[in-house]
Image (tube, rainbow, N blue to C red; front, top):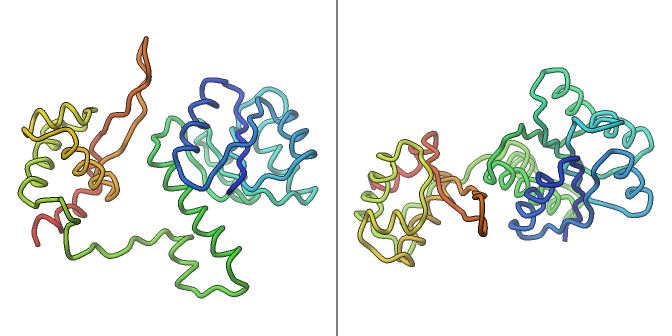
Length: 236
Protein backbone atom coordinates (compact mmCIF):
# COMPACT_ATOMS: atom_id res chain seq x y z
CA UNK A 1 0.00 0.00 0.00
CA UNK A 2 1.36 3.41 -0.99
CA UNK A 3 1.23 5.78 2.00
CA UNK A 4 0.07 9.27 1.02
CA UNK A 5 0.10 12.65 2.77
CA UNK A 6 -2.04 15.50 1.44
CA UNK A 7 -0.74 19.01 2.12
CA UNK A 8 -3.55 21.48 1.35
CA UNK A 9 -4.68 24.51 3.33
CA UNK A 10 -8.32 24.40 2.13
CA UNK A 11 -10.12 21.67 4.17
CA UNK A 12 -12.78 21.10 1.49
CA UNK A 13 -10.20 20.69 -1.28
CA UNK A 14 -8.14 18.40 0.96
CA UNK A 15 -11.19 16.19 1.54
CA UNK A 16 -12.00 16.02 -2.17
CA UNK A 17 -8.38 15.07 -2.90
CA UNK A 18 -8.53 12.39 -0.20
CA UNK A 19 -11.66 10.88 -1.78
CA UNK A 20 -10.06 10.97 -5.21
CA UNK A 21 -6.90 9.23 -3.99
CA UNK A 22 -8.82 6.48 -2.23
CA UNK A 23 -10.79 5.78 -5.41
CA UNK A 24 -7.53 4.49 -6.88
CA UNK A 25 -6.48 1.04 -5.70
CA UNK A 26 -3.21 0.67 -3.84
CA UNK A 27 -3.15 4.10 -2.18
CA UNK A 28 -4.01 5.07 1.40
CA UNK A 29 -4.16 8.64 2.73
CA UNK A 30 -2.40 8.43 6.09
CA UNK A 31 -2.39 12.14 6.97
CA UNK A 32 -3.68 15.54 5.90
CA UNK A 33 -1.68 18.67 6.75
CA UNK A 34 -3.04 22.18 6.29
CA UNK A 35 0.30 23.99 6.19
CA UNK A 36 3.96 23.20 5.53
CA UNK A 37 4.94 23.36 9.20
CA UNK A 38 2.33 20.75 10.07
CA UNK A 39 3.48 18.58 7.17
CA UNK A 40 7.11 18.83 8.24
CA UNK A 41 6.16 17.85 11.80
CA UNK A 42 4.32 14.76 10.51
CA UNK A 43 7.27 13.82 8.31
CA UNK A 44 9.58 13.82 11.31
CA UNK A 45 7.35 11.24 13.01
CA UNK A 46 6.45 8.96 10.10
CA UNK A 47 7.51 7.93 6.61
CA UNK A 48 5.34 8.61 3.57
CA UNK A 49 5.78 7.32 0.03
CA UNK A 50 3.97 10.14 -1.74
CA UNK A 51 2.99 13.73 -0.90
CA UNK A 52 0.27 15.62 -2.77
CA UNK A 53 1.49 19.16 -2.23
CA UNK A 54 -0.17 22.54 -2.72
CA UNK A 55 2.04 25.59 -3.32
CA UNK A 56 0.05 28.57 -2.04
CA UNK A 57 -0.24 28.13 1.75
CA UNK A 58 0.23 30.31 4.83
CA UNK A 59 3.82 30.47 6.07
CA UNK A 60 6.27 28.30 4.16
CA UNK A 61 4.91 27.62 0.66
CA UNK A 62 4.94 24.25 -1.06
CA UNK A 63 8.06 24.87 -3.14
CA UNK A 64 9.98 25.89 -0.02
CA UNK A 65 8.79 22.73 1.74
CA UNK A 66 9.89 20.59 -1.20
CA UNK A 67 13.33 22.25 -1.24
CA UNK A 68 13.69 21.74 2.51
CA UNK A 69 12.76 18.06 2.25
CA UNK A 70 15.43 17.50 -0.39
CA UNK A 71 18.08 19.37 1.62
CA UNK A 72 17.58 17.06 4.61
CA UNK A 73 17.41 13.94 2.45
CA UNK A 74 13.73 13.06 2.77
CA UNK A 75 12.94 10.70 -0.07
CA UNK A 76 9.13 10.98 -0.26
CA UNK A 77 7.95 11.53 -3.81
CA UNK A 78 5.88 14.64 -4.51
CA UNK A 79 3.06 15.46 -6.90
CA UNK A 80 2.28 19.17 -6.96
CA UNK A 81 -1.44 20.06 -7.05
CA UNK A 82 -1.72 23.83 -7.26
CA UNK A 83 -3.37 26.78 -8.97
CA UNK A 84 0.14 28.09 -9.66
CA UNK A 85 0.66 27.81 -13.41
CA UNK A 86 3.61 30.17 -13.87
CA UNK A 87 6.83 28.94 -15.41
CA UNK A 88 8.96 29.75 -12.36
CA UNK A 89 6.99 27.60 -9.91
CA UNK A 90 6.63 24.73 -12.36
CA UNK A 91 10.35 24.78 -13.21
CA UNK A 92 11.40 24.85 -9.53
CA UNK A 93 9.03 22.03 -8.63
CA UNK A 94 10.43 19.80 -11.36
CA UNK A 95 14.03 20.78 -10.56
CA UNK A 96 13.55 19.65 -6.97
CA UNK A 97 12.12 16.31 -7.94
CA UNK A 98 8.32 16.60 -8.22
CA UNK A 99 7.20 13.54 -10.20
CA UNK A 100 4.15 15.33 -11.62
CA UNK A 101 2.49 18.76 -11.64
CA UNK A 102 -1.32 19.12 -11.73
CA UNK A 103 -2.88 22.55 -12.17
CA UNK A 104 -6.09 23.39 -10.33
CA UNK A 105 -8.90 23.06 -11.12
CA UNK A 106 -8.42 19.51 -12.33
CA UNK A 107 -10.56 16.47 -12.99
CA UNK A 108 -10.33 13.07 -11.35
CA UNK A 109 -8.98 11.46 -14.51
CA UNK A 110 -5.88 13.68 -14.47
CA UNK A 111 -5.04 12.68 -10.91
CA UNK A 112 -5.94 9.07 -11.67
CA UNK A 113 -3.46 9.09 -14.56
CA UNK A 114 -0.74 10.56 -12.34
CA UNK A 115 -1.33 8.05 -9.54
CA UNK A 116 -1.43 5.04 -11.85
CA UNK A 117 1.80 6.16 -13.54
CA UNK A 118 3.41 6.63 -10.13
CA UNK A 119 2.13 3.25 -8.93
CA UNK A 120 3.53 1.56 -12.03
CA UNK A 121 6.96 3.12 -11.61
CA UNK A 122 7.01 2.43 -7.86
CA UNK A 123 6.14 -1.21 -8.56
CA UNK A 124 8.99 -1.51 -11.04
CA UNK A 125 11.48 0.07 -8.63
CA UNK A 126 10.46 -2.23 -5.80
CA UNK A 127 10.30 -5.37 -7.88
CA UNK A 128 13.74 -5.53 -9.49
CA UNK A 129 17.27 -4.16 -9.36
CA UNK A 130 17.67 -3.41 -13.08
CA UNK A 131 15.16 -1.94 -15.51
CA UNK A 132 14.97 -1.99 -19.29
CA UNK A 133 14.47 1.13 -21.39
CA UNK A 134 11.06 -0.17 -22.51
CA UNK A 135 9.92 -0.58 -18.90
CA UNK A 136 11.02 2.94 -18.00
CA UNK A 137 9.44 4.42 -21.12
CA UNK A 138 6.10 2.80 -20.35
CA UNK A 139 5.91 4.58 -16.98
CA UNK A 140 7.88 7.79 -17.45
CA UNK A 141 6.61 8.62 -20.94
CA UNK A 142 3.23 6.97 -20.27
CA UNK A 143 3.15 5.31 -23.64
CA UNK A 144 -0.27 3.93 -24.48
CA UNK A 145 -0.82 0.27 -25.23
CA UNK A 146 -2.01 -0.60 -28.72
CA UNK A 147 -5.77 -0.80 -29.06
CA UNK A 148 -7.15 -4.31 -28.78
CA UNK A 149 -8.50 -5.76 -32.01
CA UNK A 150 -11.76 -6.78 -30.36
CA UNK A 151 -14.40 -5.14 -28.20
CA UNK A 152 -14.86 -6.59 -24.71
CA UNK A 153 -17.58 -9.16 -24.11
CA UNK A 154 -20.96 -7.49 -23.67
CA UNK A 155 -20.09 -4.42 -25.78
CA UNK A 156 -21.89 -4.31 -29.13
CA UNK A 157 -20.33 -2.17 -31.87
CA UNK A 158 -23.64 -0.78 -33.14
CA UNK A 159 -24.82 0.17 -29.66
CA UNK A 160 -21.42 1.65 -28.88
CA UNK A 161 -21.70 3.82 -32.01
CA UNK A 162 -25.13 5.05 -30.90
CA UNK A 163 -23.75 5.90 -27.45
CA UNK A 164 -20.76 7.77 -28.90
CA UNK A 165 -22.94 9.66 -31.37
CA UNK A 166 -25.29 10.71 -28.57
CA UNK A 167 -22.39 11.80 -26.36
CA UNK A 168 -21.00 13.93 -29.17
CA UNK A 169 -24.32 15.78 -29.50
CA UNK A 170 -24.04 16.88 -25.86
CA UNK A 171 -21.08 19.13 -26.70
CA UNK A 172 -19.04 18.07 -23.64
CA UNK A 173 -21.88 18.66 -21.18
CA UNK A 174 -22.04 16.51 -18.05
CA UNK A 175 -24.43 13.56 -18.06
CA UNK A 176 -25.31 10.61 -15.81
CA UNK A 177 -25.63 6.89 -16.55
CA UNK A 178 -29.39 7.17 -16.13
CA UNK A 179 -29.65 10.06 -18.58
CA UNK A 180 -27.64 8.28 -21.27
CA UNK A 181 -29.63 5.04 -20.77
CA UNK A 182 -32.80 7.05 -21.40
CA UNK A 183 -31.38 8.56 -24.58
CA UNK A 184 -30.38 5.19 -26.05
CA UNK A 185 -33.24 3.08 -24.66
CA UNK A 186 -31.27 0.40 -22.80
CA UNK A 187 -31.06 -0.48 -19.11
CA UNK A 188 -28.93 1.50 -16.68
CA UNK A 189 -26.85 -1.63 -15.92
CA UNK A 190 -26.08 -2.17 -19.61
CA UNK A 191 -25.31 1.51 -20.13
CA UNK A 192 -22.85 1.51 -17.25
CA UNK A 193 -20.78 -1.13 -19.10
CA UNK A 194 -20.53 1.10 -22.17
CA UNK A 195 -19.70 4.23 -20.21
CA UNK A 196 -17.06 2.47 -18.13
CA UNK A 197 -15.49 1.05 -21.30
CA UNK A 198 -15.37 4.56 -22.78
CA UNK A 199 -13.93 5.94 -19.55
CA UNK A 200 -11.18 3.31 -19.51
CA UNK A 201 -10.27 4.36 -23.04
CA UNK A 202 -10.14 8.05 -21.95
CA UNK A 203 -13.04 8.98 -24.25
CA UNK A 204 -14.97 9.96 -21.11
CA UNK A 205 -13.96 11.70 -17.90
CA UNK A 206 -15.67 10.93 -14.60
CA UNK A 207 -16.30 13.95 -12.38
CA UNK A 208 -17.53 14.19 -8.80
CA UNK A 209 -20.29 16.80 -8.62
CA UNK A 210 -21.29 18.47 -5.35
CA UNK A 211 -24.80 19.92 -5.20
CA UNK A 212 -26.27 22.30 -2.66
CA UNK A 213 -27.82 19.44 -0.71
CA UNK A 214 -27.60 15.66 -0.67
CA UNK A 215 -24.80 13.26 -1.55
CA UNK A 216 -22.29 14.06 -4.31
CA UNK A 217 -22.87 12.27 -7.62
CA UNK A 218 -20.61 11.12 -10.42
CA UNK A 219 -21.22 12.34 -13.95
CA UNK A 220 -19.42 11.83 -17.24
CA UNK A 221 -18.06 14.31 -19.74
CA UNK A 222 -16.65 13.67 -23.22
CA UNK A 223 -12.92 13.98 -23.77
CA UNK A 224 -13.01 14.79 -27.48
CA UNK A 225 -9.21 14.72 -27.75
CA UNK A 226 -9.33 10.93 -27.42
CA UNK A 227 -12.10 10.30 -29.97
CA UNK A 228 -9.68 8.71 -32.43
CA UNK A 229 -9.09 5.83 -30.00
CA UNK A 230 -12.75 4.87 -30.01
CA UNK A 231 -12.98 5.36 -33.78
CA UNK A 232 -10.60 2.43 -34.18
CA UNK A 233 -13.14 0.18 -32.46
CA UNK A 234 -16.05 1.45 -34.52
CA UNK A 235 -14.23 1.15 -37.85
CA UNK A 236 -12.94 -2.40 -37.38
